[in-house]
Image (tube, rainbow, N blue to C red):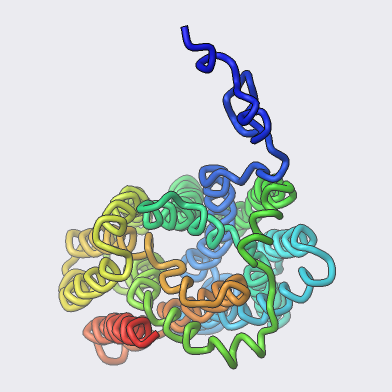
Length: 448
């Protein structure tokens, strides 16, 4: 019998080999954060953020025109609400910059706590706002201030988890792990849409507009508390801090970032623009179109959107597998072309009655799952390490601002004025921008 098989050698003991477990116990090899643990924090955190924003987006169609803009027609009231929807995305980059400053002076956990508390409070406060009939213009002003709070909070809630998740992903699995964080989008939409679908079907129109619509906004605060503890549980660990320091995932000077790495922010924002443009065009805009110009029952349409959210969540794992097989950038480019084809047939689907509208939702959500699953951090690796943390955050902010912020407002106003073909052109513009950005990124990488 070979004694070396059961007893560690002196060399093994010197190297820190544990005699019972067979693992290294050397103090210079601290435990790292498992990608699975990071993924849980990312999914929970993103789901709470998306829930808050989708609650506002759905209410912009079903509630706000009647409650806050009753002095005008339904179409104009919806456009006003969509303008407020865009407001948060305009403020999001400012929230990111302010949050970076808070983190520099008070730490990451303080920043995250303040941001999520503000996000939940801003959303829950909307549930207690007076209607226009009671508060007049003050009610609209308060709604706008709450929306500003949401935008600033979302920017400040950046924790670096998606970047850390991508860097800690096993070799050949980055597409899969990048997809995990994006699962928060269909999950947040499913919960928000499900609550509104239930309230819409169970309450009378008067009760729904009087008090029923307020419940999803109240629920946001509780969901954000759960998300806060889930993320702090990870953020406050020593292993997490060590990983962030090792990866140089800390705030940097924004001015220096823009001067030296500005082209990476610009290219990164446009690289996934087709996906971001599609985001609100299959979630919020179709609901407004059906509400205003279709005979389809709203409750039934919300159920179709719930099915669409499930399909999007199912398509995201497929996007991870495809990205690891063919490359994330190649996948984004190919999907941009498919989204372009989808945009061409969209007018016929939206104007095709119940069957066509349902097909638009289901196909659109599948494409959204495939493309949005790989939309985050596509070119984050272009940043120098010390710029990556702030650069990734501002890249996402700019992508949301350019691609998604004004999509419902632009699509509805253009389609009313010029027909549904304008929606095709709007989505096609995002496709062209994505293809050009991916091409520019390839040229720059070859030049380097």
